[in-house]
Length: 398
Image 1: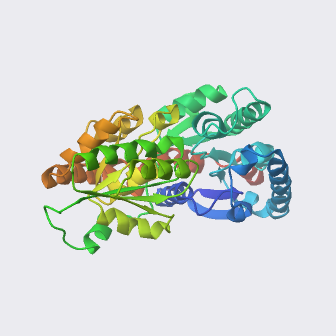
Image 2: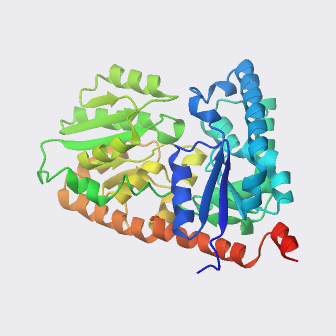
């Protein structure tokens, strides 16, 4: 396909363990790019990434660590930048892009930014940890805008996110490529579901799984309230909720106040174990929050459940309808509506209904969110990169 593979350098302080960074790298590789990495693992031992939004001292300490890490990168950067055709900045990468864009351009490389989320939507709008209009909110917005404007290509996981980011930064939608989140295909797939073995077609209890970070986007309170309605009605159900995060104490407190018996709370487990839990479940829950961000995104767990051929219930939104492409890949309910969620779970006691949803979800995953499908989203950019060498190489070959 290419005279030589386009060279893409994954660069910065990004979290190499984060699933979006891994799945984006997999898509570039599947598209034919040669990848290398230059990273300082500053974020690996940052235990509470939300603290700088609450504590000025923590913010100052984070700033010092950022500067020290960027200086370490500067010492190691010249040779990798000379090798690369394009530099990929992953999540979280706003600071990296704003700091490095001038030097990357001077090296003749194209800038690709895969933000996943903006700082503004995360800290100000969704989690509400930073007051709108405050100096911190203005600073976060400025950093988002600078990073987005500096990129030649911006990867967004849904068209709704692309539209939001384009308006935030004042840039054209022409800069965006829509790249669904996808999954780590070595961990999540229908083969993992089959490995658990056959299950009873009419289980005594409907096995329901939720996992996440308990941010407002997830709407975990809605899940607890729906379970309360089902318990009162005598519905046989077993709910497992895995994770930890911002609203975890409130959700557990709500469950205790309602006297729920059918819920088991599990602390966060390694990602590889999540595949086993998805295979265990009859139904996997997505998100139910009523925030603006929740309407624009499709979370990791929905893609993971799709890849494993699971029956999914999640909130209705423009983003999930875009992903579905007219197919019924999940039972959709209104956001923050425990009555609708309870009714959906009653409906999914029917094995044939679950099987139909699961099959449609798996087929749609293969069509639009597999590594193969997502690679096709990146090939036009890589072909252009291959046809038009960097300014530095044109000069060297003159």
